[in-house]
Length: 377
Image 1 (cartoon, rainbow, N blue to C red):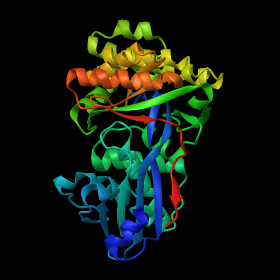
Image 2: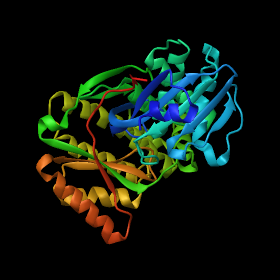
Image 3: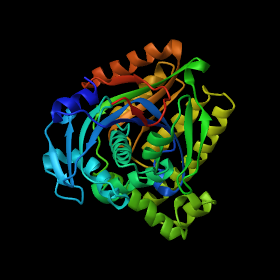
Image 4: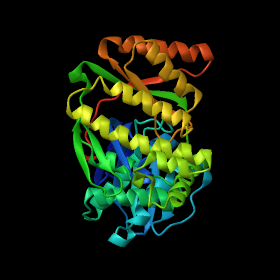
């Protein structure tokens, strides 16, 4: 059943608009976004759909097919969200930030084919789809780079997740066959060709089935450590560190040294990766992915056992490279392999998980897709 049909069934009237916003895979550039750095994500075909219609009582009523269609109703001006329906804070936050643009009440129906907690940015997709649907309903025109900043406000201020600009930008700005090279300080972005299949390669997204939640303390702790290191180094953000050796020598805290080393070298990896893709050297990206994973595991310390096992098993099976993606502590891994080796890589990862008694991973071929778009109502 489409989101539009489900809306009609739930509200006994047709929706006025339906919007789709995709999830994302970050090819490289992890934990650099909130350090004003560089990232290289792309949009997935999977995402979140929001069907919507206006209402004139100043209320937002939200139903999600992934939450059994149980309604949550709050004033657009804000109100408490039941703890068992915490997902509703995301669309409620979208309505809240759009009040200043004249957006009022609405009925929403949410559906998704993007797994939650897999590190593929289902939360940003939900926020972006809701923002676009509400803007469409009320005739509000906001440029997409500015809409990405509003989406970040929703997560930072309304939900309490200290996330950066990457996820909403990827969901709103990405184009098929390309990765999005985004400067998270300026908000400027550009397209970088990325079509793995044209190079005889397959990029697999592997959901390790270990759910993560960025509202948890570890993510916020990493961000606070980066801010503390930047303050001690006298720079606005770690993106501004030019002399890595000097910076590491001036920091006494070994934890902060590790965090700085990851962020600075990861920014360099993003620039190198973009250069490889522009040259058509897709296979050579593998070494960049492995270096990124090792840095996230050892320097930033955000990996988890299933992610490490997946990367190791993929490499044993002949993959060109792989790394964890997302905030860490659970979620997904990406693996780059020659297409003729992709099945062998899947089998190797699945066998490694079975050998450990872990829940079987879920595989998705990650092909770069278009960003958010309107669907027929």
